Structure formats: C-alpha cells, structure tokens
Length: 99
Image 1 (cartoon, rainbow, N blue to C red):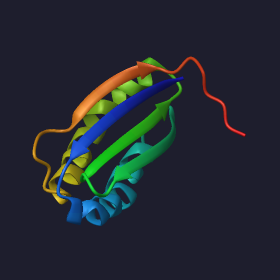
Image 2 (cartoon, helix red, strand yellow):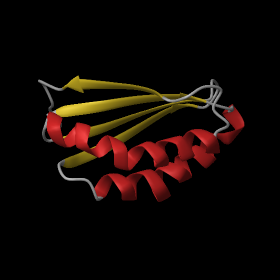
Image 3 (cartoon, rainbow, N blue to C red):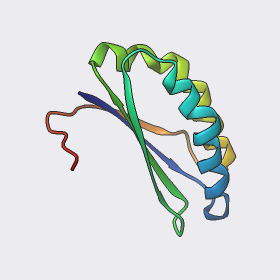
Image 4 (cartoon, rainbow, N blue to C red):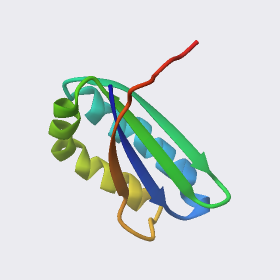
C-alpha cells in the first residue's frame, strides 16, 4: 500500500471550511481515481493545520491520481487561506493494520 501525505497551513478560523472542501470536493475526486483505498484528515484547529493522508493500492495509481487531485487540493488550501502551497510527500506504507 502507498500513501500521499499533504500538509496545509491556513487560518484557524477557516478549518471548518477546509473540512467541508475535503468532503465535498477532494473526496469525490479521489473516489474517481483507480486504486484509491481511503482518506484520513487530521486537523489542529488552534494552529490552522490540516494533514490529509490518502491511501492507494499501488505506487503507480497514487502517482497517476496526482494530476486529477492537484486542483481540488489547491481549492482546499484556498478555502483555509493557506499561507503557502500544500506540502506533498509520497510514501510506501509497509504496515497497515486496523482493529
């Protein structure tokens, strides 16, 4: 499994707008991509920080989805008045377990 890790720093009072953008724009775009397995969104309201982690079946599908989700990711950053461009990192996920 593979994971894309995105960090956005924005205005603390805009976090709910960012959450709504992820639900209404980012998730639908991700669901249309081959190999999409899940999404996590972590927020620190006091700092205005959001961390999104999308999960993918293969590295190829994760990389192929980038062009499709780039614009919606930027829209989410704009919703929270991000102070900089989203920071994106790609990872292999060798251990994944849920209970």
